[in-house]
Image (cartoon, rainbow, N blue to C red; front, top):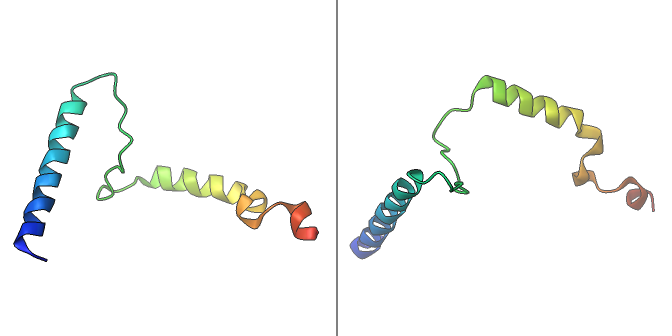
Length: 71
């Protein structure tokens, strides 16, 4: 990686953080960003997500429609 590439990346990151800081002061905005993957997810949220997925395991659209699989 060249130093020019690093500088461009740093500039882009700096701009992103400035935009995020500016946006956080507005009450009428909703962040649709990627979130904070470096933060831990609570056990309660993991548990709820797992229960929801387990409850839908038999009706998962990943398997496709039953009538199409039979055909």
